[in-house]
Amino acid sequence: MIRVQRDNPKLTRREVLTAGSAVLLAGCGIQQRPIVPSRVSIVKAPAYDQSLYGTVMGLVREHLGDSVRGKRILLKPNLVEFEPDTSINTHPMIVHAAFEAFHALGAASVRIAEGPGHRRNTLDLADAAGYFRTVPRFEESFVDLNLDDVTRVHPLTQFSRIRKLYLPNSVLGADLLVSLPKMKTHHWVGATLSMKNLFGTVPGGIYGWPKNVLHWAGIDESIADLHGAYPRQFAIVDGIVGMEGNGPIQGTPKKAGVLVAGRDPAAVDATCCRIMKIDPMQVQYLRLVAGKGDAHITEHNIQQMGESIESVATPFELIPQFQNLRLESA
Amino acid sequence: MSVGILLGKQNRDGGWAYVRGASWTEPTVYAVLALLAAGEDAAANRGLDWIRARQLPDGGWPPQTGVDESNWVTGLAALLPPDRLGALAHGRAIEWLLRTTGEESTAIFRLRRWLLGNSPSRIEPTGWPWVRGTAAWVTPTSIAVMALDKESTRSLSKEVRTRVASGRQFLIEHMCVNGGWNHGSVRVYGVDGVPYPETTGVGLAAIRGVRSPATERAVSVAQGFLKDCRSADALNWLRVGLLAHGQLPADYNPPPIAYRTLIETSVGMLVAETQKGRGIFWCSGEEIGGAA
Image 1 (cartoon, chains in turn blue, orange):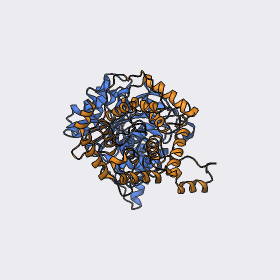
Image 2 (cartoon, rainbow over the protein chains, first blue to last red):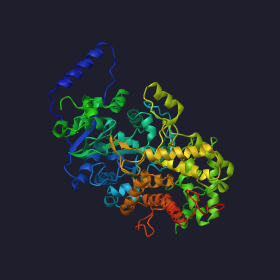
Image 3 (tube, each protein chain N blue to C red):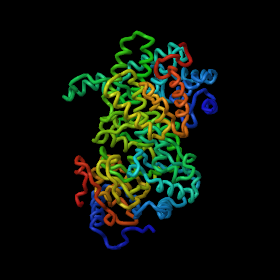
Image 4 (cartoon, each protein chain N blue to C red):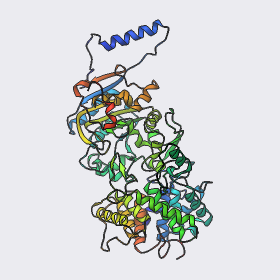
């Protein structure tokens, strides 16, 4: 059951300050653009068990409802490495639960797609990660984005040096791209969540393994540009067991026991950061997209639903160079 | 059986897709090599026509029709026998390979490092990138080294031999600490990188003939992978790599695993031909589709 977090009619200090700012700006003759908060759900999910199917269905129905009917859905999990018994890859049960939910809500098609950045043999990687065992007829539903046909696009935003990019037709042709990442810390950018997960949509068949062109263009900037390339997104972050420390591969499993979902990936990622006790305002790619005004990462621009951040927050260990990302309140 | 799969999946334009859809250069080159080895000249020739038609003015190949830049697949195309691809097209591919380096080896990048005061104490060996403007990595370097090494048996070019030697040194210096290769990072996210089976196989094939403790470590890692690996792609390349050093156990039989992709099918056929002593990834005995 998803509930709105704040139903107390009393004004909070933040709301008073926000209202005061609006009055001040109006008094100065500056017209403030009305902001529609992004809705982000946090639900507790203690384990990878059958209850996930109902939980994920609830999230999809809550945020997307009937809009799913007749749409082409592309699910994008995060598959990175073969190591068993680690928390590197998105758990296959999350992916299968989303697959079932979108089908049940009347989607015209649901495909699962990924283009790993390190290893070329994607199907073997999916097999090792348990996808063949968990998703019936997995291979029929799967698209290897590294090997998909491509179309040249010019990113709508220009944070990086990338002026053109070849992207997979399966992603560009989807009515909704559903990012299904793992909640992890990241050695280069601090945290890898639904936006960083989009690196897997850049085709290795064009750019190689690893997708070094994104590194040369700036990792944070490339994440922001990819975010701008896909206007219709939904995200469900697998935070049941995430990864802390030296993520996204060599870190250690971290149980957070949550799923975080919403239609604005930046707002979802900012909420995940707060759950991880990371300050999203210090994560460069989040600041980039927030600066364009089309994504919400400040708390007062996010309508938190379900559990409160405080009730599920658990500090994820950070490597020394990212200690400055720690939320001051942590 | 495998030939039938390749014939059945050939696109009407003569090329092959990775999975389905438009033709790509990489699966088309591997399929053509496999069909040439199998003596299926008609289908191979249609594939060769597709490949020749896609060569870009700079002498290289794009990964797919519609992509306007040449990339690492040029090394694959240069593995094709020159008398089947066409001597002119093949020669231009070799020239492209000789002009191409990882971005870290370009004069501009070296000047920038020098100006910033962090020049290396020596000239570092030169490898090949997946795409121009980025760093060199193990797989594109290995493929380019194999293509140029084959070329060195046909030409007296000192430049070709120099790039082969430098490419091999690049591979040895990008080997993981305990042997073998991943994609090319000795350190990954701040810790020692671990090798992958498929890149260890391709790297070993490229350093064929290099006798060194590093080679021995890589052979040992590959033989270890061979026992446990269940990926057709990885097992194909491990066998190629070990065959290059005469270290594939004579009694080795691959486990019963499914070939899931067209490239796995093609390279699987090429492994079998390599085991017979035919020259595909290096010059040895009878070169497929061409003169002995």
